Image 1: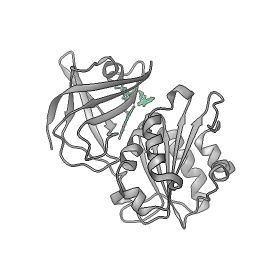
Image 2: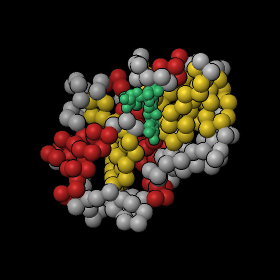
Image 3: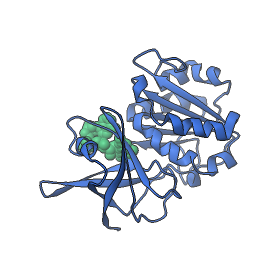
Image 4: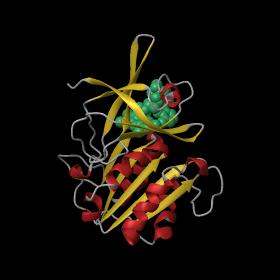
Length: 247
Ligand SMILES: Cc1cc2nc3c(=O)[nH]c(=O)nc-3n(C[C@H](O)[C@H](O)[C@H](O)COP(=O)(O)OP(=O)(O)OC[C@H]3O[C@@H](n4cnc5c(N)ncnc54)[C@H](O)[C@@H]3O)c2cc1C
């Protein structure tokens, strides 16, 4: 159900050669923070569309997507070439299960993103729900290069607003970067380094974990956490881990 809407790019952010965000106004129906929309372009008479998480909170006027260029991909290089004023299509059916509404009670919310998956968590963190429900929120953003650490200003604003309730843990895997951890997320969890770093234990009694982005990271983290008593959360079988795989 739903329909394609033709919208106009209001703003483009170029973070580096391979990382972009686009903002656009669209009459999308009410959605939940953490959900994704399908965005598309017409190429040689055919609509090519892919899912993208919305970075904006549901009550923000402009919708926003954050994406990296997959060099041989049919859509992402073309999205990266759009400029303010250009047209794109967005489908009116916004969907996805990685939302606070579907998250069981927890004291500590752990959010692990690779690359552009940060955007889904920023949408969630701009709403009140995580702050009303969790005593501590851990946001871990893993990227290859320091220049891929996007949305620094948004994260600084969250930190200024929520103080010690939030721990932001940047991870840069391919170069040393001040303040960032260096290992991949599954290794940081297996060694306990990330828990030592912020002084918080990740336990099945207290934690809900959201994993978003690269499926290798998502699978590997689950392999680390399952023996510790954390399992996938499903509607009919409550658990501790919610996932959204991008690729
Ligand atoms: C639920 C969902 C939400 C998504 N949200 C986002 C988002 O917010 N931001 C975003 O950048 N992408 C997101 N993606 C991926 C996105 O839909 C596209 O697949 C991606 O932008 C590449 O599109 P493409 O047409 O250029 O190449 P595709 O034909 O889609 O993919 C080409 C190849 O690249 C791989 N690939 C796909 N995405 C990536 C990536 N991000 N990095 C590296 N390799 C990739 C694919 O597995 C495939 O092998 C999401 C995917 C899903 C399923």
